Amino acid sequence: MNDTEFSRNLLLEISKVGRKKSSIPSIKEIEPFEHFFKNEKLGDLDKRDGGLTRREILARYLLLSAVLDQGPDMEGVRLFLRNVINDLYRKEIRVFHRPLDFFKEIGISIDEILKVHKTVKEIRSVIWAKQNQSNPERYNLFMDNSKQALNYAVFRWGVPLSVPLLLEKDLLKNNKESEQPLIDYLESFASSEIMSQELKGNERCGLGKAIGDKACHLFAKWYIHSFNLVKRKDFGWDKWSFESPFDSNAGRVLFRTGFLTIWANLDDYEDWDVIQKEGGKRNTHYIRVTNIRGHKSKKALKEESLFEKYVEVCKEHLRIKSIPRSVEIQQILNAILLGTDFGIGDLDDGLMHIGTSFCFNHENPKCDKCSLNKICKGFNEDKSLIKDYRT
Image (cartoon, rainbow, N blue to C red; front, top):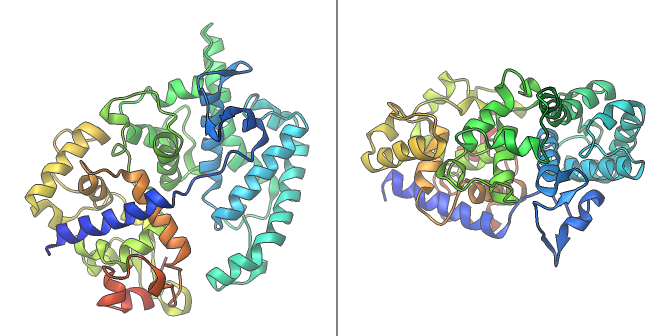
């Protein structure tokens, strides 16, 4: 089996897991969305809810959720977000229907954030600490180890809530109106990959440091794959049209199984500051997964059949390069899955499930129960990929 075949088999196995074990925020328990469902499934997304479509309101929720999902405990973050939103809406602070409510009632908003965070910490801290071999007192969902609720509320909540607010103001300035201003803005770009880049970097509406690359791609995944909010039907908005949301779970699974070391060697990753020698816990080597993005694989460039698919991905789906001269490592995933039954959403769901259920970030993961143990190079060939590295 050559490297491309191994990579394909590995990604297909992960994607099969993802198809069965999808990882998406539960919206049924969020009270403002309860009436969006019919027979356990989302109903007509273009039906209006007040002055906005259901599709628009859900997109606003997912944008906020993607920003907050960067926290250290996914289950805790989602519980936290759900309870804060429910409490705010019970007080008629309708932050998705009227984003300005969050700022008008900033005192209530911060009080709810602090109260719910304390409750979630009591529920989740011991479980989280055990899974991560850490101290429950270190449990903090505010990100960046911030302890100031005002900073967290305005920066992490206020910025994504301000995007639709700004779009509404721009429409009013031009004597226009829309029942889905955020949807119109998102789908104005040529592809979901370009949209994800503009979500962070757009000069007027970009979230900047309030959102990471991973969170931008997570939003694209939810928007297209998980909740099917997308209205456009062209290739630029299909299941291969955005990059995988690289996070510590994805990076850990792809490194330990041998995928990443196929397409570049350890020296390359050290040179790129992806592998930081002895930068992890207990003198292990730290893998800074986000640093992989943008780096090139010389080996993939020589794989003719793979490069042909890569060109198609870049030109027709990502729409970021018409004639690529190099192969970016994180986009190899799209090229390998192109034309299969699986997309980037399936793959990411599989990476998340395996990373949070079996491939824990310490030297004793549950390899014996993991569905990848027959193909994983860290389990079968090189134990150091598991023992000596952390994400």
